[in-house]
Image (cartoon, rainbow, N blue to C red; front, side):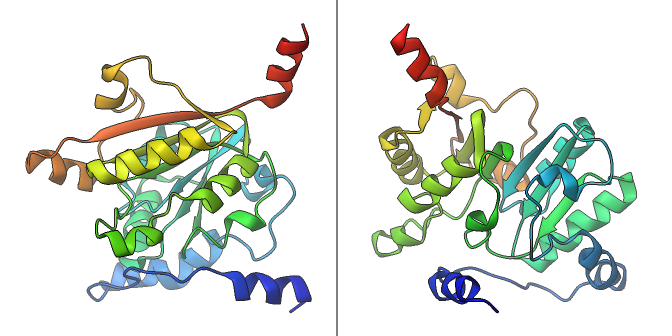
Length: 243
């Protein structure tokens, strides 16, 4: 391990959350043992993430904390020309995703079966066209707010890996986390909120489907909020000002 790798490991944030649930059934255990190593992101990422995918893909999108994988599977099936990186440390959710991908014959998915935060600094700059963060743990207690995924450090990393004009989509049913995220992203110089009115944050995007967690939240009467932000194109903004 080189000095940079050692430094990265020392700085790796502590992970909070589950990694394992009930014991996997034989079929899904086989997928975790045989298919996951083939689809797992390599330790050394290429300078162009498109090289991770065998087919002709025009862009790479990323979902952080995909849960059971239903939204990621839908996106990968709807956009066969896009390569998808799914991040999820919970092995049962990873196994579910692998089962669905195999059943549907999807080859445009790669998996990072761990916390996404240490992965972000390893990714090439301006390499991702869209990031989804849907119903991540809101850590509602005040003493746990520092565990929330959205913070200044992760926003810096997202701004670095997102292409100019790329989207960052966030959803939650926790009002406190929504306010936290909106305040943090609006305070960041590299993002802008795309909403024109309430309809834009009360409804998910037309090309998305509800996750299992969103359906549970809606059934319980909790309002789900959907925020969409764009990565600012500073070069374009600067040229416009000069003009």
